[in-house]
Length: 220
Image (cartoon, rainbow, N blue to C red; front, side, top):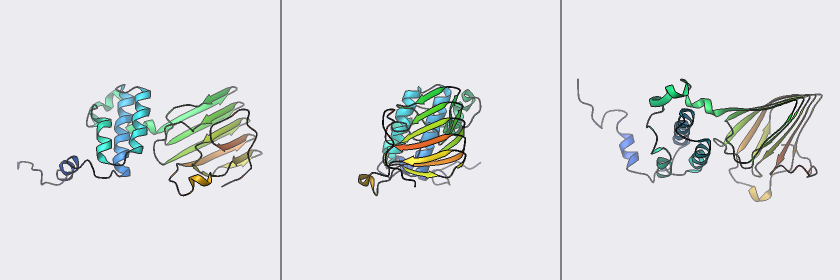
């Protein structure tokens, strides 16, 4: 069997990139780092706080040199410890769920939202504040399942909200237009799907203030 050399396919780019930490990172580079962090969280190698901090830094990274330290103390390959996560792939941490059934639930502060987060309210009130949440990527999807309940979602001021969901005997509204100061900025995209039935779904820009009166109504 011929000896493997650095010139063979798959063994040329990595050494060159490692020697060039100034190279700009791609979305795929950030996603790979996020996947490794997700596997480490599932395996218990990172606490939820450490995971949130590193994930935040991952999607803020511009160069490969900024990404490297985030996984330097973790196994190089998630497959090395996937068994500890029950054989689940790292993408499992991209899904989250928050629900309120016959109760009032508030999710706020610094927490990790999934790329696709299921929001369920049944005969209850669910308040979800994304202002300080760690968003795993430039776009997340909130899948709404509201029945005889109330759902209030607060998004960052510069967020771009796309509502693709449906409503039946329900109110579904977005309050507060984009801040002019955020014009042209690359804010996160919050995509809303799912249905509201006999329910109220309100999306606001900025932190949730339970005493605030509704702002000027606008839908985008």
